[in-house]
Length: 174
Image (cartoon, rainbow, N blue to C red; front, side, top):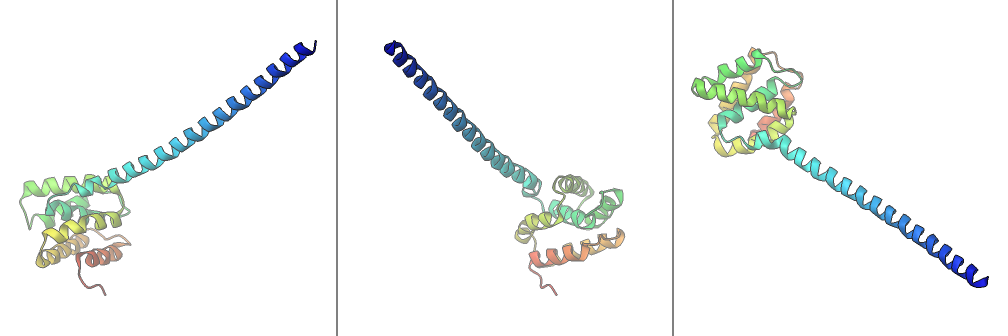
């Protein structure tokens, strides 16, 4: 009888420790799954941030950059409509041909819809503009922005955004 009790005791102890190890294995698996989810969250966030900036980093033409900046500033906190695009088109026609203007305005509208943050647009496009434009052309860009804002009522943040743009272009800000 004592041998049967010993066997049952060993079997019970084995089942107990097997259950405990199985429970610890599930806990370790849950921890590994959660770590994977967290890691995936950060990877998706990084990819999302890159995707948000991709319309701006893909700009390789100063006319596209100018159209994007102007449209972003004059249409901030508003839906982009024909007034905005028409005003941008009008000022850009003074510096380039109509085919390039149409392409630039379409791209600018798409980029502004994708980004939605005017400060980010200014920060991401001004290094390219600083490389490609002379001081005189930068002044012309600011003049085009003012002319566009005169045609379309500026937003409440207009002066702040122009100040930020002037600062990023290397002009003295009052």
